[in-house]
Length: 565
Image (cartoon, rainbow, N blue to C red):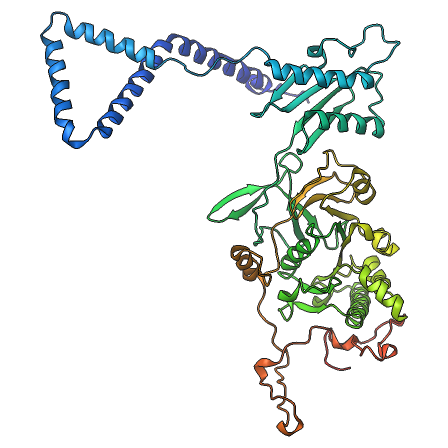
């Protein structure tokens, strides 16, 4: 059966559209050239009318009568003079044409003297790196022409370079990271310090494009982001690095910003996260932001190694299973988390073998947030106890199928003190605060395409999810609402996101004690929910009473949280 040819309108429709678009553009340009005098006179009449209205409003009320009489007299004289109206119309058109002329300054053909000197100095600095003695026609030579090496350039209002395209010879080793780093460091130093530059290498065209990045927004407070279950907003980045935006609220305004979204759950390739930074860089702020987002759909266990009460606002909240700052409580909580991970795996495996869907108690996400866990390593070693980091092996290794997510935050100089499972299974990485290029590459696994700077606001750094690109990151402002130095607006934003206080599930109340025993009487309202999973808690004086992890399968797993010792 022979094929019918496509209709002509479908076969060459794109060509006709392009031709029609070109004809429309040509007609518009011709009409603009023909009507240019009329456009100029109309613009001038509008400016003259605005000037007259402004003069009338500026005139005091007691003088407006005299001004109106003067104008009427002039109009009467012009009307009585021979050819007066014609001369007045010609004069008005001339004044309108003069007022409506294009007053924009003419674009300069080239850079001024200071800009030329800056480009020359930059060209001379690149000569030792882009020149060779064997080159018969060197592109870079002392005293050479810089305009051939810099085909495109732009300057900001301060006279510093904002964009630059650098051509380099083909024999330059642009495939080596060290050679690239030298050129990037030189360009950043010569173009102006204190700014972040983005470098784009075009190996095929032998060109390097240098651009100045705008500062990331630091005024975005904690709020409910438009995300789905399993998505966590780590912060915000440049619009050229991601293809998604989120609506955020800034006071009474709303705008769209590009986020760095971390996906967790069964289909995630980066189920756990490691955040490192200098003191005061914002790692605790990042953990609070993650905790507030995780509490929408799951439960949270928090380990505070700093001991400064950064997470006191989460104590006793609905969904917060524990907020621990002591070695015994931390050990008990992590042992319970490991046991809970095993219980979820066994329950899900039994359901899969029976052909049933997984139980509902295995679908609810469980988040384990640890702030400075290396502080407990030293305490455990001095006290002769087990390192709490060793209890993270089961949640880290088997947490993804059990909907268990581990987030570890510590200082940058404590990277070597972290256990091997933590460094091996945390494929999502975040570095906050000032850091060298070597430190960024060792933590993230790849160097960023921007130049790091020394002074950064809190919560500012870099993020990399798995094998993806390195993003600039600005964490949403999520401070401790109980800190007196925190602005009221930010405190209210965090307090509005906190879940309500937890009430006992069984409805039990604390019995009143005998006043003769010397203990103060407590009302049921004063009783606080237990912040530690008591099923795994043991007193500090008897560490051997803590139930250890066993390899025996849990035949009949009980409830996650109980009150039995």
